[in-house]
Length: 467
Image 1 (cartoon, rainbow, N blue to C red):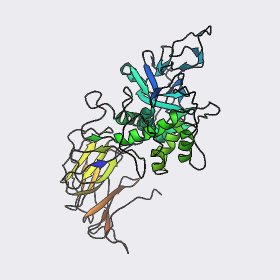
Image 2 (image 1 turned 120 degrees about the vertical axis):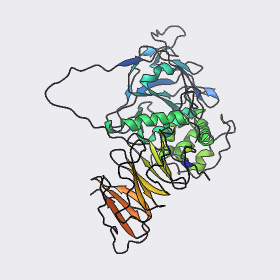
Image 3 (image 1 turned 180 degrees about the vertical axis):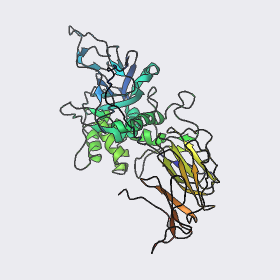
Image 4 (image 1 turned 45 degrees about the vertical axis):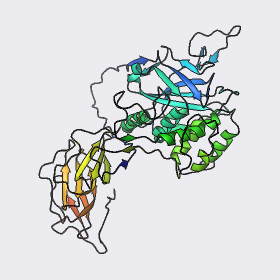
């Protein structure tokens, strides 16, 4: 019997910055690309949002989590829809920045540029969703690297794109927008040590939603290879959350907005906009989940049968690729997910978007009923085999390492693996009430019976004290 495994894995990768004294090369200006040709539409619930203020941000990459984002559209006056050079006269009205036209359409000109290697996102603030201006309406969509602008011809900004963006990027976000003052921003950023994690979080957006259609899930494999076969996206839940947000969007900021902000208040502080409410839900998914779902109106824009939940976590489910009664997970420095398949006598490696890596699932090294695994600093996987009381080391490519599998050190029905700061591997043995220790080369350090201690009985887990 094959068992699915649900995992939404976001990882941090440490980048080592090195340099030398003496020679100082001249500074090279970063390569930039024009945003010209990017068009889109802002839609809230059943209605387009006219005259909403647009801003494009480049996510920060060196100032910490939720900081350092750079607005790419400078202050100025433009026609609604994005054309520049507005001169107020007669019926022509000039707006600060770029705004959507009466039908929610917008376009970006070549006046705005981004730096290659940076991730971009758009916010749409305020505007008229049909019954008057709603300053609490803030929607957004993240659309990835500046390098891929040639593939971004149209963007939808609505509640679904907001849900997909916020849930994927929640750990990197801060919302400082004030609806009453109409100032502040939606800030997304990561420290320089976790640019890989930020890039992968932006990739997650395109798993949850399709920014060109404004719907869910993301593009299927073959049209961007974002969502591979065997992947299940929580479509009904995404639609349900979007419907709850839509109840607030299609107002002038009262009624359902007041209720939404009340249900999403955290530590006594209520959000003042849609994105702020969504961010609080994503970070506190079990708080008032059913009350939030009940905000959905009878004219909700998306049809869904998702009407009740214990929490509003979004989980992506992967099946296939050898996944069979999974017993343990580990994530390597590149963001790939390693899965121990206890019933398959194998280890599966998936890329961050769920695609199979190389010749995975791996069976080398006499893997037998694997109960646990851990990844060392070299990217090698160490697997505790409860089926044959051995320890397997696989290289980052999934091949058996030299002298693996290891059988000494008191191994007996191992159940857990951990790696200490020196690179030594520690294993909990439920079969003989002991712990085993191995060097990074696989040499047993714990003797033939392992380490024992009073009270140690059938251990099922092990952890390393960093001190």
